[in-house]
Length: 391
Image (cartoon, rainbow, N blue to C red):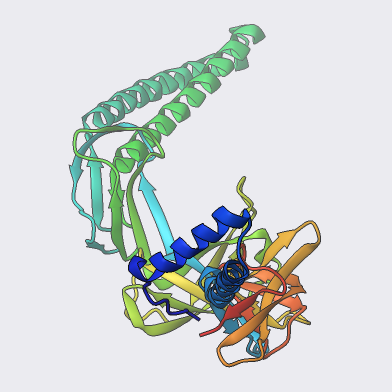
């Protein structure tokens, strides 16, 4: 409320001022008129200040804070948990040579299809051929020595039968013949080994596959067992994922999951858990799902696997993690109740108990009910009993 003040001219007050001055000069005290006038001015000032005070209080009062909230909805009987993974061939092989050597030929590239028995790579065979020739020569020499030893033993045996030689010479001849026979057999085995090594210098496909990766090049020296080509065989696909310790108990062989590939969002595939591995140092457990039907999919695709689990007993709702706070008294949320007027609300603190953390948020098992309005933003700036505006 504002008071209107009319301007007063000094000329109007001059006579009054002169008369009052004369009275003060004669008596030494203010006149009754002056006292009344001063009291009137004081009352007027008090009334003017009282009229402005409500307006000042209204202007200094802070505006009500607007809060964001969600209405708790009843949860379904099941919950969805999702995990990221990558597709791969159910049958994979890393092809390598059984012998060391230098790659002379490499006949495949990534993406090529290989047939059973098709040549993939060849090592330089010159060294293996020389080894084979040396082994064959050693075998011929050993065979000749064996024939000579056999003939000598036969001659000594006849002389011993005619009592023309001693028993010692007979035993020595028999031992030499047996030794020569053993050396001949060893030389034959060496030839077989040289032939086998020569055959191992050629790397062939064992079945119909597709080349997924080539890990070597022409002119490169490779050792036995070093992967040269990685191939995917067959038409079966599987998806490999990792799950945390909190979810591995639900991962049992035979569990069915829905698989969606990022590059094929219009179609969902079905997969069955076939393997559950041992956790690594990061407490992540490897899990493998075998696709029931892989039409249109291929190895190397990014995938998301969704599992449907029965909701934990007592779970009421799933809330954003930002809506749940914790202090020395425990976990709690703020709810908004009716504030007595349209668009107004009152903040109330509710202690809650929480369950598992899901892809949609944090499960709340007690403390709230369907229909409650829970504050989702600004939990750190609201307090119990605070009045707020609700959109």
